[in-house]
Image (cartoon, rainbow, N blue to C red; front, side):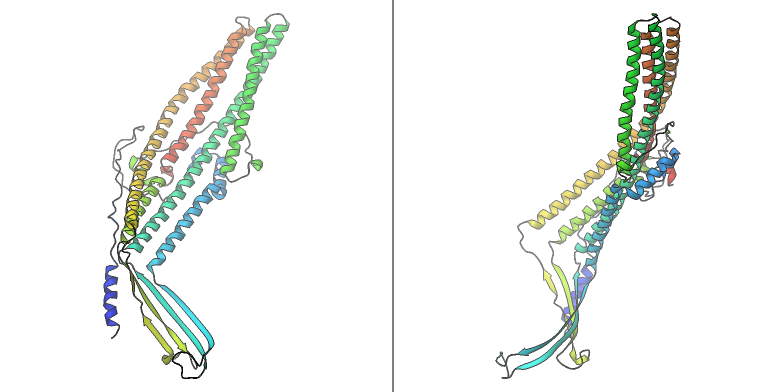
Length: 472
């Protein structure tokens, strides 16, 4: 019966524990066009389904290169960048578990055993010293009643951070995959340029030998010899420059895949750069697929929950206590006469004056929410800009490649004709040098355009949050 006066406020406290002081959360609304500007996709309706948590690959298999496939697998296994993002995700999960523990009672056990002698002259003594055993076995329970939702809002915030950290991990993985593919595309472009320069240098060498022979026969002047030698030397110098750039790109790939640059090599290989088509989908799918957008939205939700945590500090906290066990100075310990228990203490704490700290904390929480709301909008705008940039690059580079291929073919024919005319004595070597230089520049530009097309396809995959055709 004595517990009844204490039970009533406890029941009331438990009833109030459903409160939350966090503002009602409304997901941010973004204006989404019906189609991308740089595509001819007709407007239409698409069912909105969150796709940010779905796998992003293996989208690179569309390039049909087993070496690239192996590099992507190695990066997944050994990249320190990915390991760093995974560690942050694990840390976020651990922090969420720590916050979630506040929802449950804290239970402990304790034991004590000792032998003690007390003085005969102690206060309230009977005039004799006493020696006795003291054995205590008990437990305690402490539980903070979440009256104003402080703990629950903290748990909501930490769980949202876990989801955001998982999206960060997905972003890191997609960025790593794109970085490996981009570096590999540049490497193969450099291989193609090296092959072109090597073949050109051999052709220029034959032309130089022809000029020397004609000069020795008194047919041409030394100017033609020097012009031929200049073209040949320039080609050889560019071979060394390309080799230097290739070495740096190979070292970049080594770092991306978690390998030591000193022990890492990729055999040179000449192959036509591939730019597989990437379906753009619709702008609404972009918002659903991009993991960085999902991370920004979850952090905004967490910031909203933390406003509730800050506001709850203005109200009193309530902690319930319970203890019990057995205590004995002799005889059997675990018997009914030796038991004890206590309900309480029930403690309540309310800060009356803190110099404006709680008000400042609420303002800080609201400012952080506003900051993350702006960051979310920036992330969305950046996503659309990157998607439109990549779509435009794919579109215009495809048209540029057609014209550049035509230019390269025409320049090659001109170079052949100019050399034939020179052999026949119909022109001087300046015409040959001009034609050879133009042909080499046109062919190198074509290789660069084809490499850029492959890189643009990779950039589009990254901008869209993964290749839609691979995970739909």
